Length: 496
Image (cartoon, rainbow, N blue to C red; front, side, top):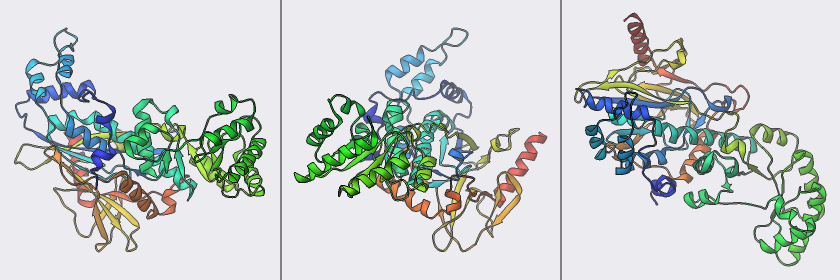
């Protein structure tokens, strides 16, 4: 099997220069500060997670791990990077970063351990998607890039999964290139959309990079360059006899469908087949029903009806309830930009520190907002399943503390609300080894495997959790002993 990191990631192929400067300046200034510490060998654990499900939904789909691993394993500062950093000045006009620190960066490579949730896994708020441990300088320096590489793909994969939920067995084609936020916004969105369940993309570059099927029709401009719509359809059928999907709404949509049907019959007479028609405006429910009638009456029942035009999961769900006769959904803006909820809001917070050879010391960040108070420790996520394999609950637990018997979880937002879990339930650890000492450890899922996993896990999730309006919350909580330790630490910190 091909290496998923080589086959499914894209950073080195899309961006030839090094990406060491893909960071916020304060990561570099903090790294310089850690370099100056007497205990420069201090180790730390950081957790990457999000606090709120996107789109007011009940879940998310983990995505972006392969590009993140590629970034970490190739991360290095080149001569040009260091020269640019040497030119940075503070408010006093002096160099911001000292020469000895820049010399340290010249030979530096990421030395940490990384454990992460495999791509395509259904995940929930508050539970770590990535755990980074190792030298505090290393773990801190990669924060901004890891958030960039995980947040957006997870957001788009989640939107894609919701679109597929709305469409049922009908395929979704990702059409977002022209509306995406820049080149990599488009490429990353295509990759994530495929993980989330999309069948194909219009983006030829992303298709080439990731081996994703590429699909396309033609634009209104094609029709407008001919003297008649019928002539345009005939010309396209001649140019693309094996890929003929006709856009029928340049002038009068239903007349366009009738002309497309005429061309479909002409193609059949020559041994070819009209693949489909596309609706891009108007009342898609009414027009698709009428288009299906016209095509069926012409004996073209095999011709598919595609639809585009600012679709999202809510509109698709509504159109299907109205009896729309649409076979394929082409989704652009809402998928590639997540336009109504454009940021996952992932964070990267420290959980523990230690000097080499010593026990981990839990670290806590307090906040006036309960949701922003962090959970201390070296955290893992244990998933509990029912006998039929369906998802029961997730436990966030401290690897140093273990899990008390019988297992129970405590609501992170309400410490008086707890739930006991079956001691004999089937369990799995969601965070698996990815890097050890900066070197590859374990395997990554291929895109196809990640996509299949997302589909399978969503099927094991109760429909009430998957619904779009007021989804039922999936149980995620702190292991009982961890919750108690966190409460004690909060009391101690507030009394300090």
